[in-house]
Length: 600
Image 1 (cartoon, rainbow, N blue to C red):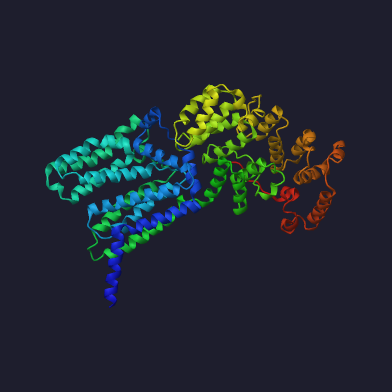
Image 2 (image 1 turned 90 degrees about the vertical axis):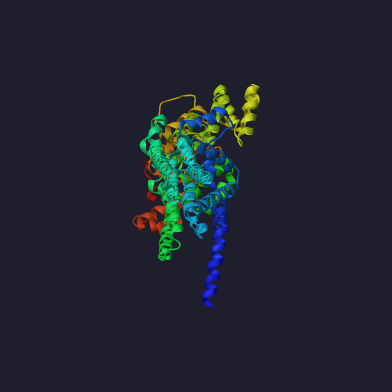
């Protein structure tokens, strides 16, 4: 009786695998995960990619191998602009790849578990899509390689079939990149398995296909001006994604093909268990390596700022505990947009001055450059913003970006460089989701309607603040940037509060006080934030004789609390843990105990 149930269970599982149910279930799980936990990564993929329905733009794809894969990947990526589309598109791509791999396995063997085996390579390749440093190009190249193999297997088993693929290899390399070499390996194994080696001509052509598919990347590397490693690995950059993860899907496909071949062997179950455990461990490690949920939380702030959803940033700030400089940067930026930078100073986990403006480095990711660009643009230093937008475009994996192109347009419109703006707008007008914005702005520029242009909110606000004096300064000299902004417009409260808070985060109390006194007439028009009063108390200890103190309204309650803090500080001999409960949200506690992150 137990044996019958066992056979029935096996039969049911085999039917599920035959119909591809495991892949469908995994696709549903994938879609739910993206929608609930990972949608902002795909917003970024759209923002740092670009696809235009323009002949010149499409021809530019021919400059590198895998042009067709890259073109298709960018075309698909543009749909990630819409909320919810990633949760539909990625699972659909997963299913297409899953059934393609399942079909390839069936071409090599009549094994009944093809639907189960196909999961492993498919999951390994889809993990690539979750990495912030990759796009869909490798996925598309892998899929096209499988479809090409399928097409090859459907051709009549004649000698000319091998000749056709041999002739097409250079063109296929241009279309799908280095994976053409793996296509040659698959074809070689397929032909050997089907006993084609008994024909001398077919045997020679099969060997030539294998050798030629391995030589073509070497032959074309000089044409494309790429390195030896790039010739075989393109479209993936092994400097951003380790070589092991690039090769893992390829080796996994060969392994599952071998598994399907030995299903009738006595040792098959042991092999299946060992391989399954190995794959599960690899997939778990792959998720740990490529799926970055902490970065997703940060990208949520970035995208919501990009979309102009300040309320959503406040929600995210309350939902998650951001402890990085980048997180502090966007939380502070949102507070500044609401005029609450100083008032909500301690609502943010402050990491030092770089929590206001991220430092730019030639090491690491392009993301801090994009983030810093947003700060400078908000404050009105549009020329610094333009510089950073160009840098981010250069250092990003695609070297072009719909988001950064919009920023360059904004900067040139603000600077009244309309000809340059028109050039960019004509490119952006040929996109699917940015064309309306570009078209409306282009109409204003073509009509020379300066009045309408000047009434655009970001034009009106920024033109008042653009520095007219272009002093040379270092890239990360934020103080100089603030000074130029205030020299241009002393009423630029955002720049003023940023400068004051920048000094406070760096524990530069004297520089803070000097700035405060310099702009005191502006600052005293409204209530002086509690943060500033607490910092001024520290400065007062060192300079009690200044005549200006009579003009600075420090509340008695703050003075009283400072005396209490100072007495307890002496009593506890500076032991911060005993002061934290009552004084954590005071500048005095920050001044004594906060440790700022160091710039690299």
